[in-house]
Image 1: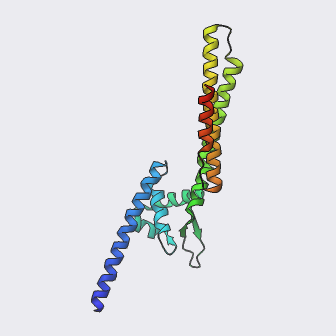
Image 2: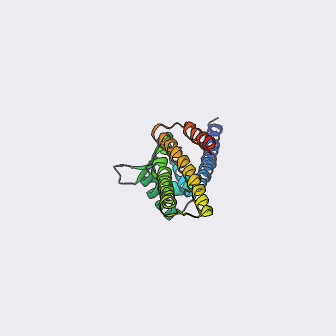
Image 3: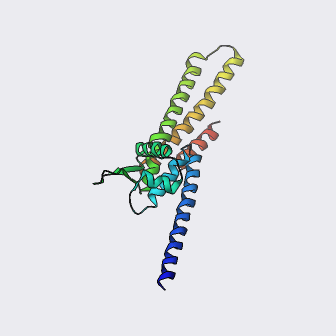
Length: 192
């Protein structure tokens, strides 16, 4: 009976290890889709699914990643605030994952997507300013082209600003309301 129980425990551990590996690969692919390194997703997942803090060697063993990859990925994950180093009396470097997934997503949206939207808005504003201030002409064809271009740039700018509202709200509250984009599109179509 003891032998059977021990065998069941080993089988359970093997199945659990395989489950962690499958989940880590899946999250790694999601991270690749979002233009992060897959190793970062794999490491975060392993830490998230671990009931205790792990050191780099343990993470290497579970993920099969090289020591250098684990080290660099852990540094990046700490910079993003999704993994933290925990104090340990034995001086081992132990790591845990941020478990508030909504906060993780909000942080990424604040640090990356919101910055991209802001840059896009700044570029569109510059393009519109250029057309309105320096791209004017008294020639009818050029004048019509300038108006057309200004109208389309203005539409893109309106959409980008509406998108910023959505991304900022998602980062702040974790919820999305597509109303601002819908309203911006409706206004643009009605005004076109």
